[in-house]
Image (tube, rainbow, N blue to C red; front, side, top):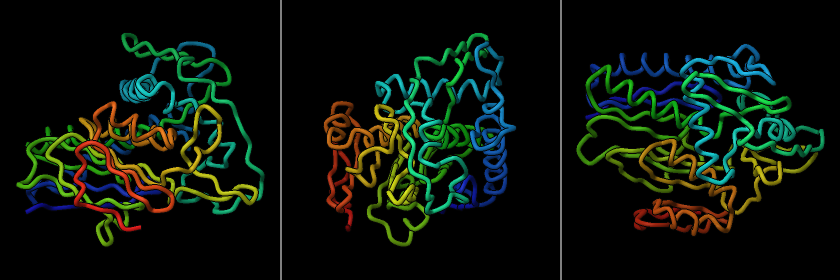
Length: 305
């Protein structure tokens, strides 16, 4: 038997699942506290967040939480050769993604703007001193790795607090810690995690690590009469070319899984080979509903277009 709590956050939903119903309240409170701390430190939608208040052109001391978030974002950029890059903030704003998606207008009459992405290598992070140096004109968005990092961090913290296994999902990105239930943690997958349980494309079970789904099917809107979405190709400064509408990846952590699923959306037709080279089980759904699996993803769970 498992117990589950769900609540809204950041224009999406957070879920925590534990094996003992008596531990659910403490697990939920721990997750809420971790989400609030991350929002205070890392939100780019809030002018008063630690991230938004960073100076430019000089080194600044930062909290351990922001240092961890920046380190994860820069490592994601490094391992993907810049396909997942935290310096895309201005490019996102150029697509009119400048607020929480819950209040994002569905149709912005302004034409889309293209902003060159400065590049992750321009961010100087010193973990020994908990300092970061941002050059003038370099603005950060940690959204590509942020939800996954919270899922991993919160799962580890909750397991330590309650002494039991836990699964945490933030917007459909899943992190786990501790002993899983018999048969593993059951996860339903769809374009929209909010409807996945009712109408899943696929169901999988994981006993550890993480699983992430990146999709352009829901977080999309119109800019100057043209469809755009939230996944930026750092090579162009625009929304990535639409080859896959959804990519799901399993990996050793939620951060690793989400890094790969986001990179796959950016890579388009090159994604299957890229994922296979890294031995990452994945499910890719093309914009026309065609399905492709990579590695040892269970082929019996087929997606219905």
